[in-house]
Image 1 (cartoon, rainbow, N blue to C red):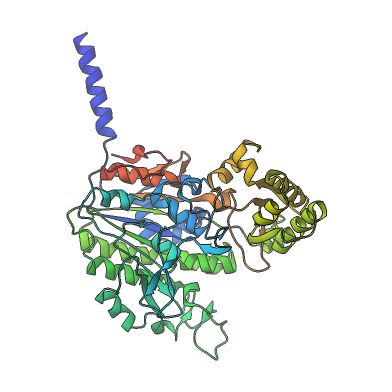
Image 2: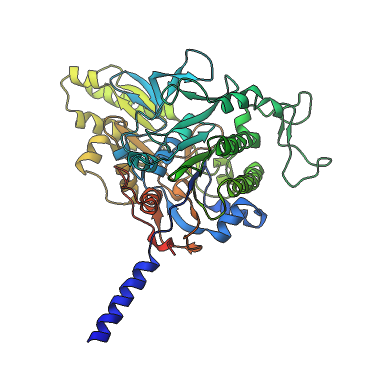
Length: 519
């Protein structure tokens, strides 16, 4: 009996040891690659030899990781990343939404109460004030620990939302000013090192560059685009939509690493970095374009360069990196057609017309639709109230009109989502997770797979796998390398990080701890 008890205790101890959280790192690198589908890791695997190669060979790689809410867009992906909260809890219902009180559209981070710092004087700034929940960084700093939290990206929402409310800084690139900026939410004046970066006019050094394929010779290669006038190459346009946008982010992140002494404070620091250029390129050209292969390979090399800098700053065994993407993307409809796959282009205006006509026919003329967010419609609350109508019935009339639209897959109303008058499947679950009544639209339209809105390029936003399936990779001391095939959510990242740090879960976190990766 005694031997059996000792054996049981030994088993429990070994089991506990096997799942003990890794040691607290000096630095957490929270990395997002914008619009980086999981299959980019496998399709281009043979061409990775730097950052992605290091993650895939030495990291814990989740092959079946997904976003669990819709719409799948940048602001939602970045807010979920470090909060573990779906939009139904975080309040980040999209990149932008119609504010029913202000009667105008707002972005996920727009803030009339703060000013831009470092850019054109007098412009409104951005802040996390619309985020209703805490992040990993917030929970860390609320413990009174000597930690520094900084976010960096070209996009303001991508720099701000992962860091949360208590971040020491968030920096994004303002193309109008050709400068890295922040807002008075964080500080009244840019740090000297950021001023120094801006004095070098970060984008200008690329203004005589030509984007050639990464592995092509300069003499015989056909360029993707060029900033050099008078060449045969197409003009590059905005710096954000070229590989040099990511290079600017990486260079700025390296500078922040050193100047802010990341990883050298009394407790764990967090540096959140989001590479944005992949998204701009993917939107314009689609996931099958050679430019997407090229930017993926270049991101591998940039990440390798950045990891070398982190190794030098804090030591290879002293940091933890977690990498994901904020969403995927749909193929170009023209590519789908060539493959004899479903797909096509739909009209946003058609949705408005159908809803408007149906409501006018039943209830009388008036401006029934006051705003639109791609395939989501906001109805005129004042008009509904003035006519003393039942809101749920009005929503149902509009939704029924949209169900007859070409390639309608599912149409939800806000009232139906709240009351449960909806099918019970993964699509509905995603829309429930993405619905925040005060900010989300009244009518939510989902097209059939591979059908998108817009006449050029491609997009994302659906709960289908091509938009939800993204990488999740952990790399660092105490992390058990290998491939993990179970389905997990991006919502699982934040509770896993807080468990490692020994701080409370973020306030809206709904995921689980990925303890299987603990050595």
